[in-house]
Structures are given as structure tokens and as C-alpha cells.
Image (cartoon, rainbow, N blue to C red; front, top):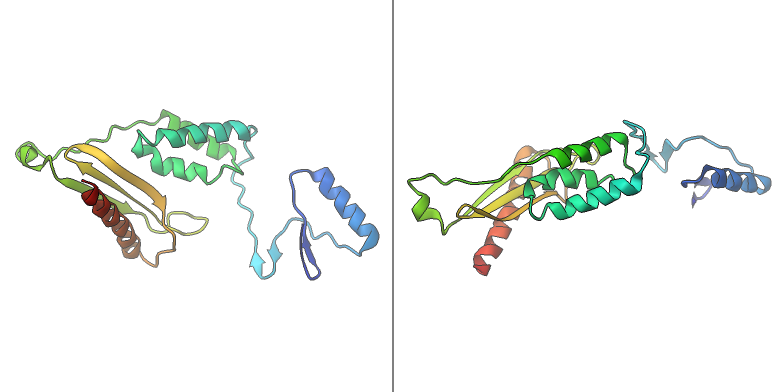
Length: 191
């Protein structure tokens, strides 16, 4: 229950308990039930329900948790797993469908430097960086990522949502590039 002056929000996962609390409060105070929350303290609340809730949230969390460990050896899954992790507490049927697609998905990551340069470039670090711009429709933040190779071997990778909202695609790319350079600097020091 959240109370601010004379406005109250009551929420929970047991409708009978909520009804009982509202009934008990109405015996003491004059209450007006405004229905589903749509506006509170200058904030407009928009409910995004694109499909019904998934009927087995524990199963969803277990599978997604296992997929998180899978990204250690399958970095190509990192972005998609990151997306479904954002819905661990309110998963829907659409999110479950996405998890099943991730389970079926597979891609072998390999970088080929070209046969002519292959002998000379095996000892060099190569980095690839990319970012989308405002890719998350919920908070408009961009997701950036990188893959760093030592020769033909993938040794470091990441795909994560950026901490701030970018004003342009160029800014999103620069932020991803800065993360890549930071990782390259650390790897260079380590090596």
C-alpha cells in the first residue's frame, strides 16, 4: 500500500486480500475506488499487456536462469537472453515463445582474417562493436555490444543495455565503442 496525502495505491497478487483491505478501510474512511491505476502524482501509467500471463512463472525463471549460464559458452545468445531476463517477474505467453526460440537457436561464431594475412595476424586483438538506438520500447535505452577476438578465438564479449538514453544513433555507437575500448585496454594490460 502506498499512501501520499489523500491518494492511496493498493496492489498485490491476491485479489481477495485487496478486497478485504478496501472493505476494512471503507468502514473507517470515505473511499472511492478509481479502478485500475492510470494516473498518480503526475505520472501516467500505461499497462502493456500484449498477451496473457504465462501460467508457469517458476518454469520460465528456471529456463531463463539456465540460459544465462549458457551465454558463457554461447555469446551469440547474450542479447536475446538479456531481453527475456527483463521479464522474470511478469512473464507472458509471448515471452515464453521468445524463450523457446532462444532454445532452438544456434550460431557458431568464427572470425576468419583471410588466408593471406592469417599467419601475420594471429597474435593481434580484433574488436567488433555495435549498438542499436533506443531499441527498448519501454525505456528507450540503447543496447550496445562487442566481440573481441585474439586471432580467430573469441575471448571477450558483451551485450548490455546502456545506462543512459542516447540522443542519436551516433551517441549510442560511441557509448558502445567506449565500452569496447575499455575492454580492449584491460585485455591488452592482461596479455
